[in-house]
Length: 68
Image 1 (cartoon, rainbow, N blue to C red):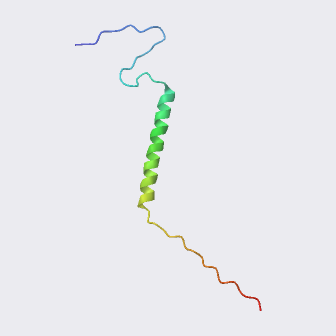
Image 2: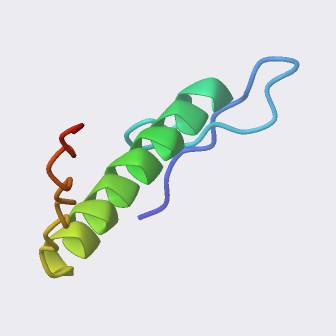
Image 3: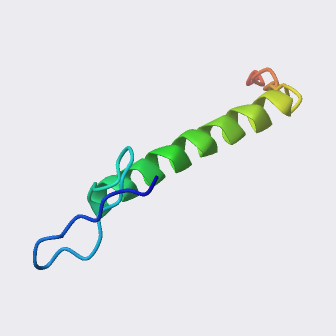
């Protein structure tokens, strides 16, 4: 069973079927940026959780000298 041939209007080269098939390029870029930011956040959280906790050394000040 073959699909019927449909005549396209002038200026239309192809029609893609499926979800998001005819969306704009800017929408694709925004989706790509969002996915990249989410992935980077996951990687950052994983690396931060894998690092051992470090204590910051506290410098002790010597007591003030008394003048005679």
